Image 1: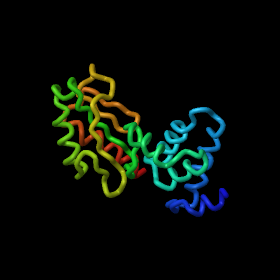
Image 2: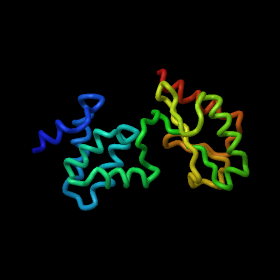
Image 3: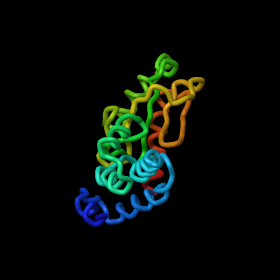
Length: 170
């Protein structure tokens, strides 16, 4: 039966992707409440939740795909569309907003050539708007991946992004 389910799944983009997902599922298989940890690790691995991975979870954990999609669409930590290597979060919470984060967003959109909610063609950056990144005292703030930048002014945006472009080309 597992072979039939695997054949019925949508094809993974890379041959190794199925092995990666199988390993993640195996890590949490016997733990109660394993759906969220599995989904988080898969999201971390791919930077989004590919359909074949969701189908794989459904097959292996015997959770209906509709339930997995409900969870995936409820939490903003998950993405159902491909995202760039570097996720840029621009805080538009009250503190950041009044201190100028809309200007940061505008500068980022110009620098990257995309609007918020979009990903650059080279899959290097995804630009997202969030309501809070938890550092109101450093407003206005942005986060690139795990790095948080506080008291950012629009003139610093280009330098911040360029540092990620330079790192990628090394």
